[in-house]
Image 1 (cartoon, helix red, strand yellow):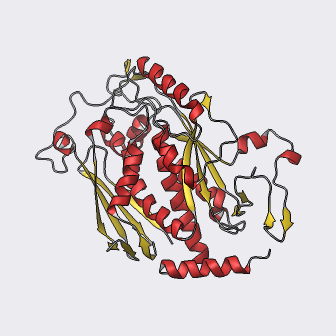
Image 2 (cartoon, one colour):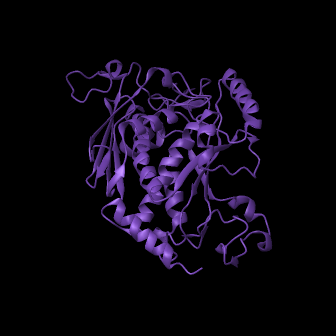
Image 3 (cartoon, one colour):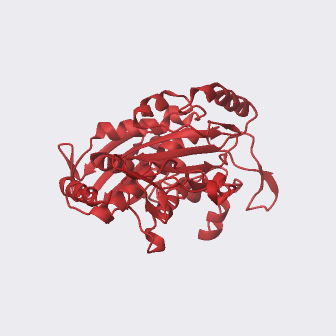
Length: 386
């Protein structure tokens, strides 16, 4: 019912995104989307590219007077550096120019070589332009609308960094919507300020070595009702939808719902959330070891989705590779990159979780306008036993 498509290359004229299936009446503005795009650009460890590029956004369809129309919503994000790349990325052949020398030294850990092999390219430019994380700016634009839709239904999405390198945030940290502004004010987007200095120091040390850092982040959804998702079909399980959404983000190599990997090491008696009931709270669970889902269905607890981001593959100190033209060992090509992009990836993770949840909510509650969806949700909540 809800889908989006993005187009555009990293150094092309700009990015385009179209979100189809969003209900009418959701309040959204260019100012709000621009603010979300700015969040994606921040974070300690970002490279010089963030200083040169701007996100020049325009909403070109689907919104009128600050409200969605129920028609496809179109975004364009212009590339302010396009004049420098008009020849290298020219659409027509008359004005075209190639990289000098061609990018024939693929980076380990990047889509360069498998993409060249898949499409038969003799250089990496046609691959790296689309594989670039720059594309995620379009996803953040789409995710802003999805977050506004969820907010109108009483659901808030927030993210925070849980580790950079080996420096981790205490496991008990569980931020809520009221913590979002404080998290964004942190240079590494952590909810626990006690680890900020250690993380920024590690990033500085890694930059001096010409290396990169990965880490983990968590996206939480507060206010999600029970019953979203399905235990019936593999492709409608909420866990599966969330994992799919998160794994589609560049450099994400692992996803867990709640503290899944820690739970896997525990016995069953300490792995599950016992169910309780009282008149004041109805059915509830004193713990949230399941991360807010059971059997592919939301439980009504806080949803917790965690993702592991590998260190970025563009290093100042290039890794060894092989030139695809000469077959000789060489140093990999260099592209402007970040030392650490985990804080920015967490913002992209918010967008993707919001899209997955908005899609699942629409599947269950339907509606052509937000008022109808809200009525359906309210009636469902009122009918829940307990």
